[in-house]
Length: 311
Image (tube, rainbow, N blue to C red; front, top):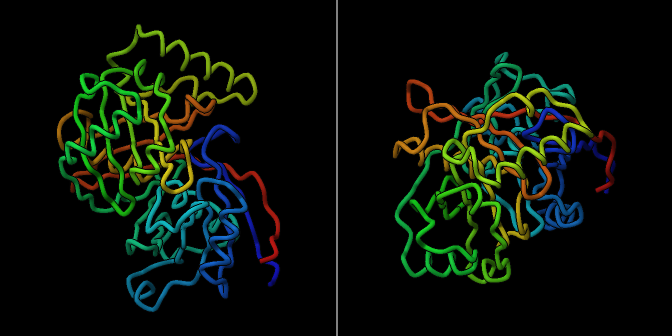
């Protein structure tokens, strides 16, 4: 065991304690898989990352560093909020990118590009594989969510490294009312991302909940961005199979939702998503598609804890 540099950051927020926390061990060399998993289980955060030098193949492809990503229950090949949070921690610890304003991260899915945009970083969403979900599984998932099929506008099996069952449903009201059977979702081994467009719900009572949550958040930690930036999509993520009942803000899910919903015309080529309302958070994710059809997923990151950990 040795002393290693450590940070804890809050991702997809410009105000600490309103986003999704991430633990970052900035020197993961020499740690076994079991040691990494044990520490991730101990932090009890949705993800914990370990920074390593790039592999020879990664370095040849331009990687600035390599990262391994663990939930309390498993390792992930890729995840969004750990990508942004690790980039912030690596840079704040003195990391020097090969190209100014750009980063290349090596992880389980390969190389992931990041770029600086309007004061925050954004990552290039990995390629998405998607298909219509099996009817029997969809029916079981809806039962576990307590959601009637007539409230589902469209559904898709999404895989960009992490695997999600994506649902677009009729209203923010329906979304925030969900009280899933997490044990059932774990038995089904299915992570579920549920989204609802907010533009059609201006008068729904649920939006009063969102506005009240934002007022309460600003009372403790003022943020003009939370106050003034409109949100186009409300999202919830249920990930019982990897030890997380509900994730506060999920970059990989928002990436795959954007790739799917933009491709099918449900969302425009640029929009913002809010996640965490039901948990008292106010995470915000910025989604955009460039001229080459690459989807970029961005958000702010705030440092919260900096110190040393013995591992």
